[in-house]
Length: 177
Image (cartoon, rainbow, N blue to C red; front, side, top):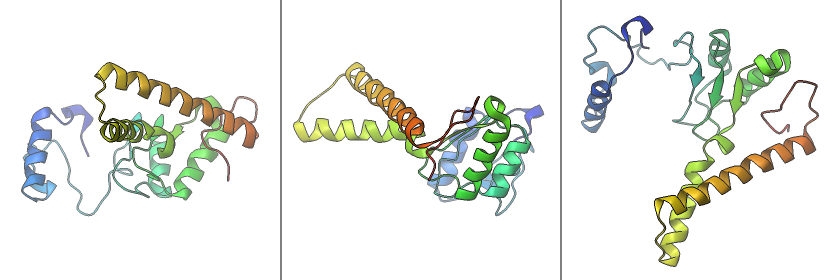
């Protein structure tokens, strides 16, 4: 966990972490000048305190009910999964309950299927280029990606409207069931 009063990870720290991982060394060997605390065997979610955005991106079920309760208590504004199923179902239930209680002031939850679909879409575009022996410019790929993301958002809203009964002031972040 980083101490906000003494700064955050610097590019030099990130490079050192990459070197450690390349040598298969543990993170507690990071030279951090006492600015960080390493808690052996702990995940960061219940330890970070007040943060605005949480991005579980490593594994399925990375954030548990207890951990998301700590994030909500700390005032998190957005939990966006960068991995599929980054939060346990119990954690999602906490976020959805918080949304129902707080309405627009609640923490926003972005499920992995939507939040990380841009990377999946670009991979699909790359496969399409390769299989058809095409070469697209970065602008062409970006244009195709923007269209995919726009349609993904529209389908999500259409599906929520069809299957989820929204209360006044609520915007469902998940399709129920």
